[in-house]
Amino acid sequence: MTTVTSPMTGRVIGLAAVPDPVFSGAMVGPGTAIDPVREPSEAVAPVDGVIVSLHPHAFVVVDSEGHGVLTHLGIDTVQLGGEGFELLAAKGDTVKRGDAVVRWDPAAVERAGKSPVSPVVALEATAEALSSVAQDVELSAGDTLFAWN
Image (cartoon, rainbow, N blue to C red):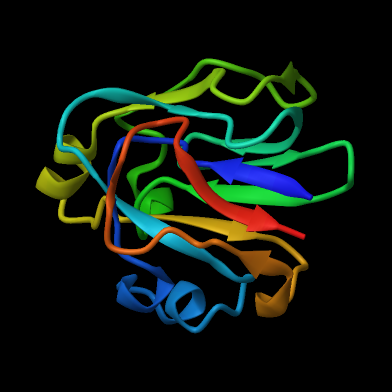
């Protein structure tokens, strides 16, 4: 079992509340979403593993069991062209849960007209594979978000 922890501090709102049909419809995969606190912060690795994909607005960490977890910082933030995001790690890096991956400012994302709501998705998983999914609670970075069985 893989425990996936929150990559940021904020309120868990669930995928259905994400203002993007690809995420809200769980087309990317099951998981949840976080409405982050509006202050500059670091998005951290939600699992121990290797960064297999890294963009200013999104990253994927794959753990030793082959579970890939996508953290997407905001919605439509790819349109910002990396503005307001600072990479703190590199593709191929081995990270521990809680290691900083990207520094960003959710308030700046909001000022730029984008939603800072951040999906955290279990790639190539079924909804049934997830359990103990946090719902409608305030979490700090590193708190348990869901279990992937």
